[in-house]
Image (cartoon, rainbow, N blue to C red):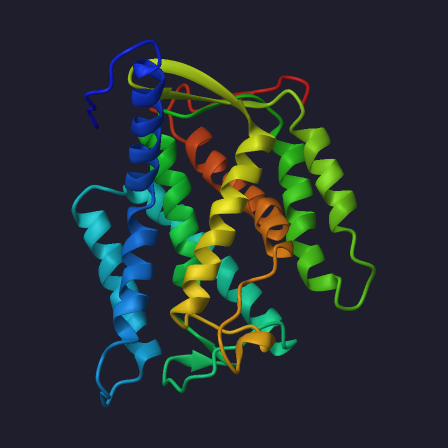
Amino acid sequence: MLTTNITGPLASSVRQLLDFAWIHARACAFAIALLSGLAVSTALPHLPVARYDLLVVYGVLLTLLFWRRGWENGRDIAVITLCHVIGLAFELVKVSLGSWSYPEPAVLKFAGVPLYGGFLYAAVGSYVCRAWRLFDLELVRYRPRATAVVAAAVYVNFFSHHWLPDVRWLLAGLLLAVTAGTSVRYTVRGVRRRMPLALSFVLIGFFLWVAENLATYVGAWRYPYQLHGWQPVGVDKFGAWSLLISITFVLAAVGRSGSRNDTIGVQLDQQA
């Protein structure tokens, strides 16, 4: 728990904000460790093992460390693994279409996609699972079936828009509609607060866009316009991440509602 010497009428609010940020940093532990490993790997001397292959080993070791230390439980690992698999499928299609690339050689690489690429999505899954526990999250008036259908459509559209009309704005409207009235309750310094679920998607999408800028800067992957020198990732990716995070939330919510011990994790809208 963070402490501060701030006094006065705003002291409580400042402490709440600092603790909110600190809990988020703890929830991002896997992602921070993964990005740090990526950054360090760029400074390594020439080795007989490809950098991408080293990052696969690093990602596996990180996963084992978090599990053995109890920072992630079996249910979390299941969600994170599914995020890894779904992410790799996403990468295989998008790389084959030239949306971005992994230009460095590697042994553990299939159809242009290194296996470590899945850990980038696993890091997002880890964040959601850890935040759920650290903030004692509760989804109120959550519509599981409707939200899952729209989230699945969002995922498919990121493939299909290469051949069919891009309907992401329509899907964004549908996502707002199915999450209207759905809120996230969370706890900071013993105080229970509430946030609209749609707003949480937007906020997470923004920070994922920031993380994507950092990741491409340290060579995690390259967009076509970054092949001859790094450039900031387009702001349109902010919107894309705000939509894609819905998939991870759906998976995490299924994992939470499937546990008998997690009695307050998800409150379903009875009309959903």
